[in-house]
Amino acid sequence: MITNGSQQCLDLIGKVLLGRGDPCAIERPGYLGAIQAFSLFEPAFVPVPLDAGGPEPGALGDAARAGARLFYGVPNSQNPSGTTWSSERRREVAAALEGTGTIMVDDDAYGELRFDGPARVPLRALAPERTVMTGSFSKILAPGIRLGWCVAPPAIMPHLVTAKQASDLHSNTFAQQVAARYLASIPVDDHIARITGVYRRHRDLMLALAADLFPEEVSWTRPDGGMFVWLTLPAGCSSLALFETALKSNVAILPGLPFYTDGGGDRTVRLNFSNADEASLEEGMHRLARALAGQLRSAP
Image (cartoon, rainbow, N blue to C red; front, side, top):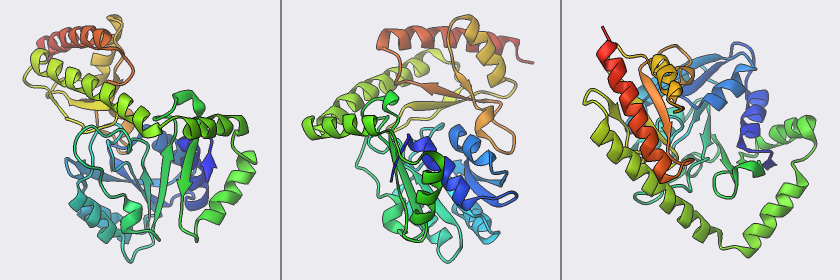
């Protein structure tokens, strides 16, 4: 099903699968757009801790056995952390959901933007009857095109279609024609290779600058794709205070607090490396490093 951006998929999934008080499992930290979309249906969020390999299978299994209606995750280059689930963890997630009533929502917005290593198997290939998979043309064609897609099992798709019809009757026809013409005339894999090459250079530059400029008490992720690096600040530092300080130097960062449904995240920060050129990235990282050093000096 073609949608008006992959964000609409989340709204439709929420309409079909969630009701007031229903348990809804989500990664911790989780994608802010999903938290916003699902919050409208007033579920009871059940955070599943995320580590370097992916979501913790034990916590996910507990949530599924407790009746979670769905588990939402971003297995490839997660927003906000940049984490990619390992192949083993994907199998463990599928096993944890087997025999339960929990639907896996695999948001694959960043799957094509991979820099290092081979692509990982999608959750839908491991549990096709239990997985709804969504994706976006925005990340590989143009952000403003606002076209996404959703693939779902036969037991779920008719309900998503009904919700879509009630929402907007159909997706933007003109944007679909533009995308169809582009895909028919331009080797899209070559285009994806070009943009991932640029993003890889930007990631490498950001990580190198972080290693050179940031205090040793700061740690960060090394994403193998996508758009984001996730910082963890030392004890006594506040991401919100850092945001306010950096903004005075005309540097915008995103504090981690909104990505946590149960509180927390005050020492985490999301950085984006896809949107700025290399000169701007370098200048921004120097300004952010100065803001960080100043906050560490003033920390109790």
